[in-house]
Image: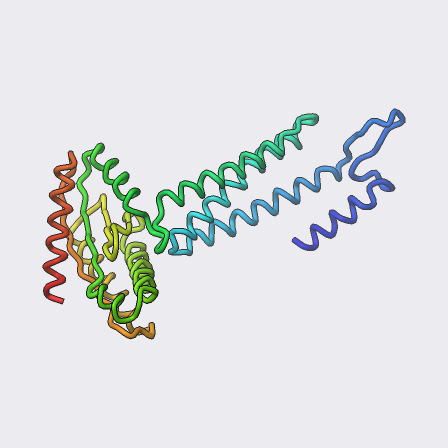
Length: 269
């Protein structure tokens, strides 16, 4: 890319002498030459290159906030690209600035949505986003699986090692659950329900998925305890329930059952 930029600089700098980019006729009217199209062409190549790289980063990262940021950048590139293309192809139309303005506005609105729907500490979906997701499933009368997760002895972590260490534990749990969900089913909905409780919702629930999810979460917890220098042993209690949701009463029953199983698991820990 540096070589292309250097070439464009030379062409633009020498255009008054070579008339390769533009020229003025005997009436001092501006006319484009072939070289005038090299600048937008190079810009579009660069935009495509950056977009592909951002998309690759989005696909590799397990971070929700990182994926949201990448998505916002991809959307930002769309409007300037389309508007600039129109401006280049149709002489006399100046709409590139409109495209950039729409791009900036899109990024701003997406960032506002992220702040509303994301948990500030963990970057996961928050309670509000969870309830909105459940409402959409109720309207569609979906059969769902709800997995409730709670951090064992979280109060003792805060009491013995401070709230900063407690926040660190919650962030680690969020990473564990993100990795587990990504490896089991990328369509799983993950949220921080509140405090040290997390919830996973599946629209394609099965006993196989339940088994895989529990095994993957436990494996990730063991791995985290092994590689992290923790003054305590991190462990989670898990409860899963499923059913068809036609109303809030159905959802409440499934949630209560998952919560009950989670506390039964906690008593065994």
